[in-house]
Length: 295
Ligand code: BG6
Image (cartoon, rainbow, N blue to C red; front, side):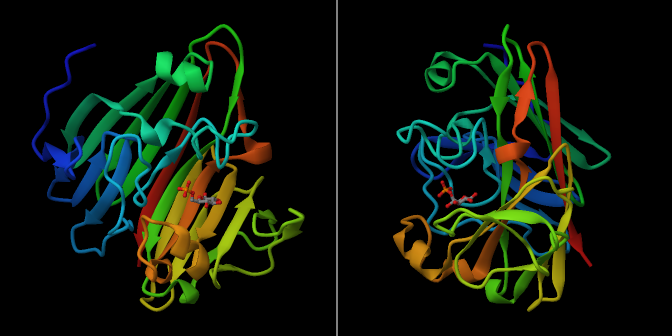
């Protein structure tokens, strides 16, 4: 294993919880943030003078091999349940594995982290492909993420991915997503799983679980009760997923307080379903997301 890079000013290695997880604390003139090595998951981000950008459940599990509820989990190499084997972890294994710090630098007060995850015996048991994933995160006035996936094997492979962003809201029932009206979505709560067209903005009225494919993936999450918004600017992404567990599902989630669904929503950017990616041997694919708080 290569020697970890030295940490620049503004970056500290920190323990996360009491179960042996580790992460990095970012503290620069522009922002504060927290990243978990497990999952390469940004757990918190706050630009100076701004409200916190991300929601992290106060009951989140911080333990090896457990998904952390909040921040920006990375779903890879599949999204949702495994397509054929229900014993496999939901949303793939990337959010459950430890990512290695490959590079870290501070440039004009923007802190850049590069984290890497590559195939090993454990990932090949779950997904028999030789890949290397690199997640580059830029912590400045805004938060930006870029995921690069390389196929290092001799055969093509298919994968799905999502930046599964959790956002805090004053009241999820008074929030909406602009940018998806007229798009086709799969409503995961419809037992018949019919596709339908979205009329007007997406609203979170109770449980909401909609997958939009074939869209531009740029959208705006408005928190009407606070009159603020987050703009999601994505590239290489053609899918958006809108999720809020609502009261009944939240009651079944052990890592979310009962009323927490009212104070959060997920707007996820990636490539899932018919937008899944096929990567030939030797090829590299890139996906990026920038989150900008407005006004
Ligand atoms: C969303 C899915 O992306 O993630 C939902 O559309 C799912 O169906 C949700 O319930 C949370 O998944 P998990 O595995 O983190 O509980």
